[in-house]
Length: 314
Image (cartoon, rainbow, N blue to C red; front, top):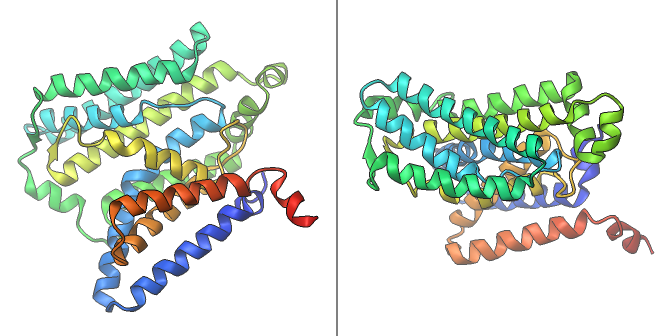
């Protein structure tokens, strides 16, 4: 598999520019402030990266999991509702619920030959509704400030248990993608499914597995974030979809399927977090930030077009 920067030269350039912009913004601040900003960046990374990883892997398989926001919200609500009495049971219930939802989606898509967009959109609406039912349309408190503090406790200055979990997910996925047949089979599934089946790739189980992983990662991210905040709201985490898609696209995942890697997705999530932190440090308004993010995505889309560099070489 080719290196991410060689596949997405434009995205790599954007990453460098964003990193330089952040460095310039941090240069006017003290060391303590810099450490705080880096910690904040990795906390946002901890929220976005696992979701982007799962969603991005479904995109590599030429599918699309729109349900990640609903699954993340529902799992967080389940975890906090049950976890008020037993945090371990609450976390397990939230993650198991996410895994079950993902597996059900994958089996439905492959078994009935349905579009993943329509199935996951239905799941998004269903899980969002279930989150309201679980919480009674209220914000639920965990009532464990000690647990919340422990989850968000700085480790090695700039990390927390949440960000270390995100990094661990990326590392494990990257190793599996690099050193096992799973990565090759997943890319083959997204590139040409009929040819992949002919070559012996079990595309149905592969799609079911990648949807299970996607929902499981969204659920785990939702549980950790809700425990870290010590509260859960049925509408609090549903806006994660757009940043996750953005991170995957910036990270070199093709909407046409068959291209992308966990490392690339991680870089995409990091670019998004750096951009967010840099713009916040420069005092850019949220509305303007959305416009700038849209421009970055547009630039990535143009730079990844096959004819773009052909036109430049003329």
